[in-house]
Length: 335
Image (cartoon, rainbow, N blue to C red; front, side, top):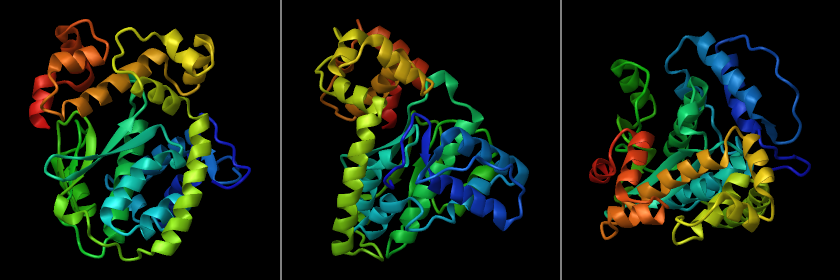
């Protein structure tokens, strides 16, 4: 991000606001005046409000997909440019995941490759399970549509069999099919985590504008800026501590805070600024880690429960069903 731009708990890249304004302007939608912002970041609360207002005023169930049509190589500065200049589709997806902190959203991406070599880009929200709102779903769907647009814009050959997996959606089957057609993908529902899945044969597809010299220069700049952002991102810091432990069984909130050189009170105060607590963040981490561990057929459910700090398998099963709506064994079978 530009020098002088200060990242706060409520920051978001200005590219999101500009995409919404561009789409609203194209159909002459009146939007309420927003606060002036400087640099490359905005207040996420202002952008969420603008997005909800624009979607409601448009009356178009496909408006989110149409907003995404305006994305360009420089929409998100060196982040989007690194995707545009990457050598192939696999690198585009990995960069989208590795440097997603640059967008400064409460959403994260996780790149995963399956046993069959297919690529998955998971869309993960740091928001507590019971606090996802309609506005949150609008933002997630827009993020999804923007990623799909980047993939289709950048690849030199059409990728016609992209699958999007989602949970439950509050729209009709007709609207869902129209959205899928607009974003050039298929959509399946009732999955525990949102993801984009691309078959292995497409991953080495060269990108139209791949340029190794420019790409390496942009990537170097992006890395340095994401490192600065990560130092201020308390969620990423807590995740790093949790990831370093073989088991969460005896790990307390106080110990996590100590490893971050803050008190438990300070840790929770910083998380509260993001609308979460240590307990809600730990639940999100456990859910995401469980999904990853269940990919390995050699790891038993009992071992997963132990690694995640549950007293027994039944406690883990109850928690997982509360998080996802299905049992761990059902989820593993789906995956």
